[in-house]
Length: 205
Ligand SMILES: C[S@@+](CC[C@H](N)C(=O)[O-])C[C@H]1O[C@@H](n2cnc3c(N)ncnc32)[C@H](O)[C@@H]1O
Image 1 (cartoon, protein in one colour):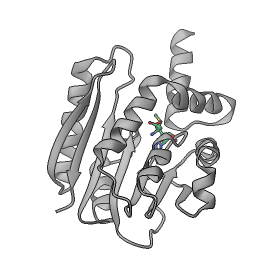
Image 2 (image 1 turned 180 degrees about the vertical axis):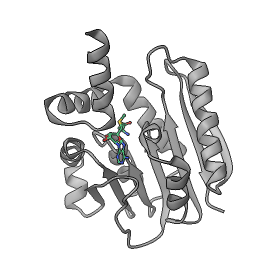
Image 3 (image 1 turned 90 degrees about the vertical axis):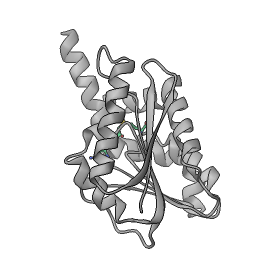
Image 4 (image 1 turned 90 degrees about the horizontal axis):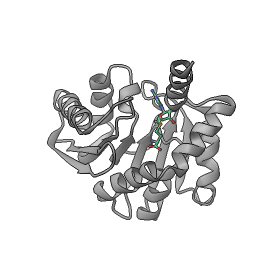
């Protein structure tokens, strides 16, 4: 029974839907570690005021809110495949959306919408593990970036029993995907949470 509940909950973090999806969105928006890792990831991305940025899998939209504050003269695009998360993130970022500084869309990472101009940066927090063929996806994303554009991929493993070794392995896996997808200047930062969050940053050559 406990196993079934846990499996159902993990599924909600992959694609939140229905009433349980609203609950998952509320947990993501209010859990201290989730708030900290999103804020930290945006800080590491070194956002400039005119940047055009894409976030993949925005969930309840915490990082979107930080990104739009750091880029008041740029534009923040977000995609997430969950209709429930689109509603949560739209509510959380309503003023910036009305001001045409943020555009949120329901889409999957393997069928991205078109963007009008090359991106300065891409962010994703705790979603890469859900992507089909991550190296291929990261190659497609690389081509959306300007030369010199940055990507930040954060992971805080949430599997039962995850510890600092799980986080370190996640960082190695992300690094390998980024390397295979043709990124350079790949480096890892670690945030002291339980378990630690890792953010792997890289650049389009
Ligand atoms: C664990 S939640 C993390 C949400 C948010 N990034 C955060 O840290 O608060 C994963 C999010 O990624 C979205 N997601 C998962 N796989 C996706 C995919 N293939 N394409 C688009 N969104 C995806 C889910 O709907 C969910 O909102």
